[in-house]
Every structure is written in C-alpha cells, then in structure tokens.
Image (tube, rainbow, N blue to C red; front, side, top):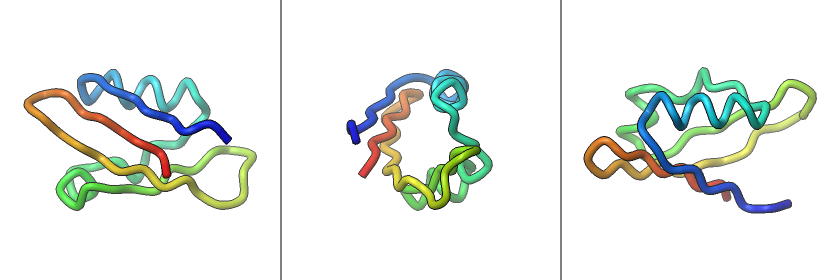
Length: 64
C-alpha cells in the first residue's frame, strides 16, 4: 500500500480525502489538536491511521 501524504488548507484536505474514498467524520477540532485521526473507506473493513500536522493554515496528513 502506498503511503498517502496530503497538504493544503482544511477544506482542500477534506475534499482530497473524500476523492480518495475516505469518510472524514473523524477529522475535527479534537483530532486536529490531538494530532491524529482514523479514516474509514466505504468498502474497507478497518481504518487507516493518519497524523495531522498544522502549520499556519496548511494541514499535512500522513498515513501510517
């Protein structure tokens, strides 16, 4: 599986993740402050772990 790295403004990151098939319910203020969240796909049992780095208005999501 390829490692996913996404950078952009909050709305850009959410849109890009949705285009990749992820549900973004777990991406919220609490998860941003914690620095991580789990993203789920429609037809996938389980979740992918992403770290969240925020610098200014740019968010970087990295899949692990």
